[in-house]
Image (cartoon, rainbow, N blue to C red; front, side):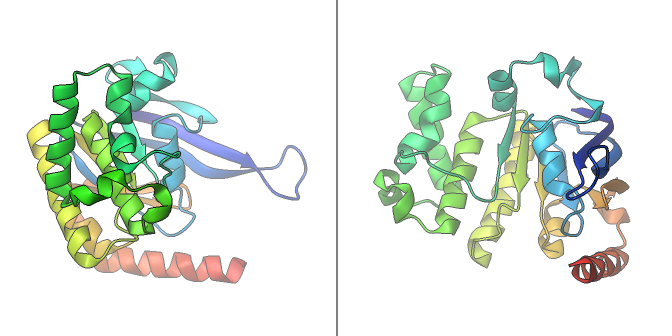
Length: 248
């Protein structure tokens, strides 16, 4: 996947019709199979906005995004999202049971029942999800459990690129650590590229092979994880959060 000089602007609240604020500005980078990318930055830096652009939940104001050699705007949205799958912090089961929600994308693709069952079972084992969850509905799950189900639904699709927005934010430390292990294994064995936005720098560091650091909508670092000055990053984030608090 290739991102070329992408910007995203929105109308500034309470300003003249022509006044815009840039959520992202001139962002460029490339994603390779098997990449484990931690997307870091302060609140409002543009992390979620960038993830939404990559599977067309939003459209860029300027710039282009390519999947392999194809402009993603030329790929039917349903087909694109089977290849570039986004897991948001708060996902819905849309009235389905856990099992129905997880396998729904596979049924849409017309996969054989045996393949669907095999992927489901493999995912349950990887994520340590009890089988008694399968018949539960959304109201019977905690926020963390729904987060885990959403991740399972994405993993069974086996996309080329997996986009994760704070996937461990509502999970306890044990489950969070296991998810990072599963994601690392999936990236390596299936060559799935994973971009994970995470405000927990220790988890971001443990997971990543590469780090993208967004600051006020601009990409200020795109480096291998071993090259990151984590103390410097913490200082930048602290200053940005302080400034955000003053703005409020």
